Amino acid sequence: MTQNPPLTTENSNLKWGIIGCGRIAHRFMLGLNSLPGNVLAASWSRRAETVDAFVAQYGGKACTSVDELLASDIDAVYIATLPNSHAEYCIKAFNAGKAVLCEKPATLNLPELDEVLAVAREKNILFMEGMKPPFFPLYRKLLDYVEQDPIGRVGYVRAGSSVADIDREHPNFSYELAGGSLMGIGIYEAYLAISWLGATQEVQAMGYIDDTRIDMFSIFQTKHEHGYAQVYCGFDLHGKGDALICGTLGHITIQKNWWNPAKATIDYLDGRSIEISEPFTDGGLNYEIAHFTDLLRTGQLESPILPHEMSRGMIAMIDEARKQVGLKFIGE
Image (cartoon, rainbow, N blue to C red; front, side, top):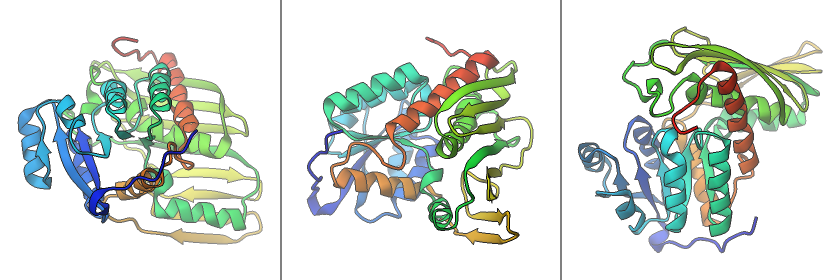
């Protein structure tokens, strides 16, 4: 991909706009406010009272339409809506010349993501999916450690989480907004499997859908270029939420909650056990935001840590799992 000239902003501040002012947008602001050189300039949400309250808390201007937000003096957009609207807002932002950090999953399905990526390439604009685990200090430290002291060829990944205490009013339970455990949680496990094992070659999935019309629990195993994975996700059972990565010379346990990683243990075949600990601050989204702003300031169009092909692989895996579970969204 062609590199853009480095971004220069007045007073070195990078000006952000936010589309959607729900729960994840508040977590985003916790991270953004911890990063010097970033400022919230404009926000928009479908409900006027929501954006007004958001702006009263964090500053910037409240916009009455997404078009007003995209016409504002902003450098980048964070899309904090649900997956059913991600593609639409990404493309609108690209057409307005704005870089995009889009909450996971990047789009409803792979065809939508390919459309988004095609427009990003055409407009020569930075796009990155908001997948937080690979940017956490623990995860970066873990990768650095096993590069120097390998666990051998990795051939198996096991991970999962089922969270039984989510408020039933949470958008994850909305069929119309493309909710469900595969979209909300399973996408994390898809990242872990692909990042350690390579491209997905086969998916075997099963799960159940209740009267909400979304999957309440799903389990799937996958065959990859370099091995196998077994993962689960759900909303009505209480799962542990750790991760296991097995190699020929040892295995890694990322302790719960593995997608907000702070502790890991490496057990080697020779009997050694290494503990790695690296706490995170400000909610954890600050690390992906910092990476994105570095990309934007240096004129990059794609993250080397979370490249577009990784996003394609993750949503393709979820597409196939949904197909086998029987979860088809409106318009598909």
